[in-house]
View 1 (tube, rainbow, N blue to C red):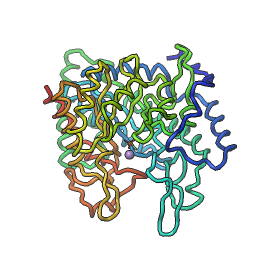
View 2: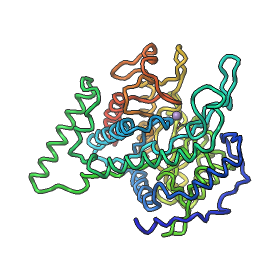
View 3: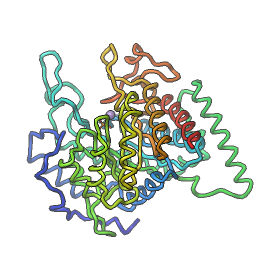
View 4: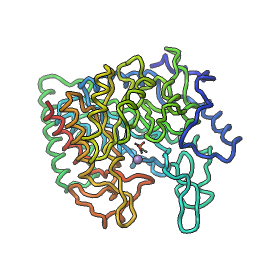
Length: 452
Ligand code: PEP
Ligand code: MN
């Protein structure tokens, strides 16, 4: 990949800065923002354009039904949680889920972290009120701090440089874990170490790991020990929200002369920033990375076609992923017309199900939560719709953590509303914990295996 190390900064004039950008922080200090942006522009790329192209090729395979996309990680990463343990637990959880899906469905799994850059959040209100005090809403560690004080909540552009540094450190660990031997399929047992063993799901995982181990031993006894089992490709992704950051990290790839956002392999535009004439759409249109767009229950088939027209007019394979987040009660009614219109247009997209964001509610105690059963029900509906239409249910997009948090209710551990207070740690939306994530993977593997 040496050829694309020389990414340059000459993207001046590429983006239309006059367009309206939704969900941007009100940075109080313009000079400080300029300083952060100019520093970011001088820093090396976090990912290489060639890697983005590799991912695009794999997405094209998934869109054709020949692979499955697994994307997972925090709703909002924080600087404080970028520790070796936390990062390793998230990677292990994703590797375990991928093994379950791959073994269950005999389909290659594309592993993508909502990681190493997922530090900014769109918010429904610019301000948060507690009692008589109103302060700017928390917009992710990229912008301000969760603590409810005036100084913590004031947007600070120096944080953007910290996002870069924390992403860089996280990616360094991701690359070490996935290329340095830890992701070797023969370590499928190791990935379960340190997690609660006595859960039903842990036992089920161990049983599957034994079967994989036996299959690998059998192959080795026959003289087959392929390199492919020793490392995995693991890609980074986040919502491209703070445009100053994403633009500062957009570089011209020296191989092709084309602009890539080198802050992550894959970026997506959120449900709240995908206005067709807005600045986020202009940004996504001009970068060559594979990109995603979240589409919610208000999306019409015409909206989906307009997004395609803007973002992938040439129908380039692997370029565009629609991440649907309809809600368990809506998906069977709303998704079919959208999928039908897209199929009819001849455009190829990867269909990914985000069963999290349409199923959030407030528990009586005030905690934001999601029911495991609603999450599962939305994925089931997603598979049913695609089954009926003869299209491929291409993947899932999950908010998860490797830790034993109590943020989503239900699952085998039967976490209740009363349990939420025990270990509720998310900086934003509730995540599936390690056990719930594995459980979901086993259930989705069955759906994948049973599809016709
Ligand atoms: C998210 O993915 O955390 C998010 C804010 O999603 P959406 O844009 O679908 O609401
Ligand atoms: Mn979220």
